[in-house]
Amino acid sequence: MELPDGEEAECRICRGGHEGGALLHPCRCAGSIKYVHQECLDQWLARSSGASKRCELCHHPFTFSPVYADNAPSRLPTTEFAMGLLKLVAKRTLLAMRTTLVLFLWVVCLPVGTSWMCRLFFMRSLQSVFTLTDRLEGSAVLGDWMQGVLLSVVVVGCFLAVSALRDYMIRHEIENPPPALAPRNPPPIPAPEVHEDERGVPLVNPPEPRNWEVVHRGDGVHFVDHQAAAAAADGFGGEGEVE
Ligand SMILES: [Zn+2]
Ligand SMILES: [Zn+2]
Image (tube, rainbow, N blue to C red; front, side, top):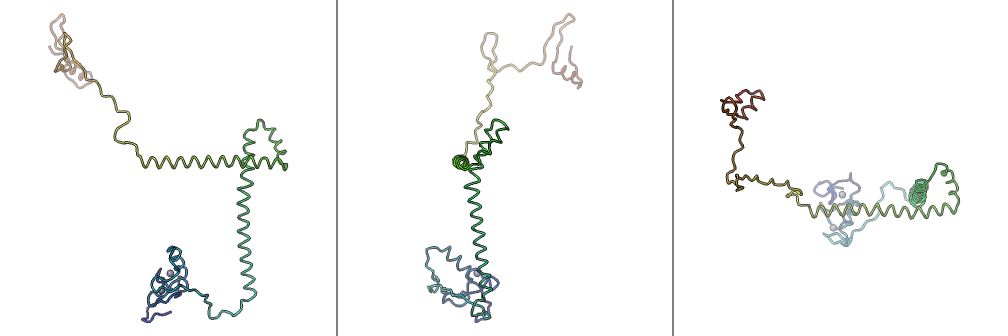
């Protein structure tokens, strides 16, 4: 497939060549937009739903006809036909088996298993486990199955409700974030110390905390510096008591 100007033919959607499948020209467009892969065109048409199956450029309805290789036989050989049929039957059988297995698991195993698990959970002694063989009779199995269906529906319903509630709460949290600026329990502001004089009148300028005092002893009056004494006790030197 060679274009008139010697350019290699390419798909007008994915710009790929023959390696992406056979290039078809399903409408009247020519030039660089002449060719398209069938897969690309199918995807394009599936996405542009509502639009008619016509080319949006030349408005020609897309037409596809099966194209056979040049060396294809005129009639399908019996072996090919048989192989194709066998493949189809195998595929359908596999699908049917898979569907049956899934249905069996959901409709039979899950309810009966749930019912038996519930029965084992509420068992009073280990000996009564052996009485469970009574439950293998037809009517008992049917009863267990119905009980199991009910239990399974309740369990699955609870699970769905919890997950829905969780989703709702997460969405609520995202839409209404909690106020993060003010702390919920601010630390209490300490009340200011009120200093009063001897008559009970509050002082405007409270006295500085004293770290010295004058001590009257028998041998005279001593000036005691508590700060220096503390420093001396810590080993920093200094005189604790000054004459
Ligand atoms: Zn393509
Ligand atoms: Zn066209």
